[in-house]
Amino acid sequence: MISAGRTRAANPPGGLGGRFWFWTILITVVVAGIVVYRNRSGLALWLDDRRVRRARGHDPK
Image (cartoon, rainbow, N blue to C red; front, side, top):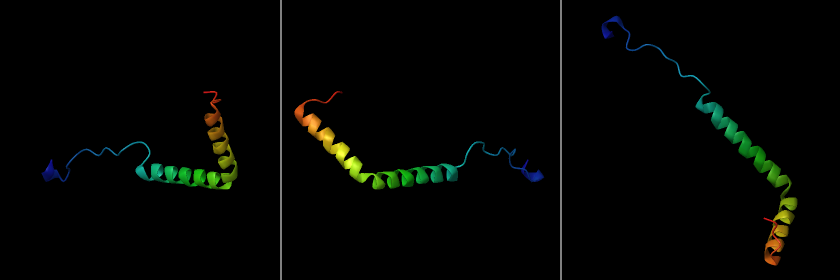
């Protein structure tokens, strides 16, 4: 086979490549960060409310 110039049969990889997943995950993390940053006061109130409920022992979970 090597004397013919061919080392193996071509079999290109299928599916989505690594760059697609890298950019998809990066964009998702950036968008989630922007959403959390923009709603940080509401998030702080929600977390504080959960702490108060747990301290009182009224956590519905």
